[in-house]
Length: 186
Image 1 (tube, one colour):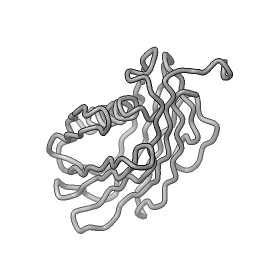
Image 2 (image 1 turned 90 degrees about the vertical axis):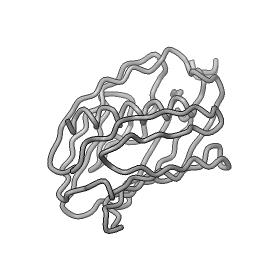
Image 3 (image 1 turned 30 degrees about the vertical axis):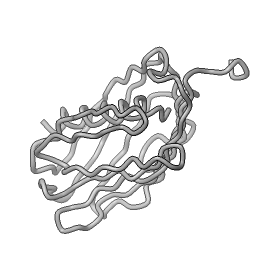
């Protein structure tokens, strides 16, 4: 189902953040939605750890290793997105290492290689077409410590484009990761 696919996408995004060391008051991130095509809506709200909220959900978040969170995702997709629609990520890790990939929004598996650690992860995308409303709450259990153990950052954009090449959604993301709290932060 579409909700199952969205769970998979959210879990994969958290995996990408953790695996690429993009995250405690060890994981800090903010995002700005620059564009959302008229007739569509989307919010992602975390139950804790964020200091602000806007029309698109939680923002300016500081997450801690070993903590459980719940992400609530609500969306309305007014158009029909088929396999020729895509989402793309264009980020720089630590300001210099490119992290770019593009996948169809539906009907296949997306495979991504995470820079620095050279880990490959895959996640199943929803069946085509993608359209309509969905609402899901997804538990997120962060591991007790960073799986890699170094500080890092990532900045860039995430974009969804329909089959005609029109941008459906575009946002900028800024994230940093620390492997654990320093003694000054305790």
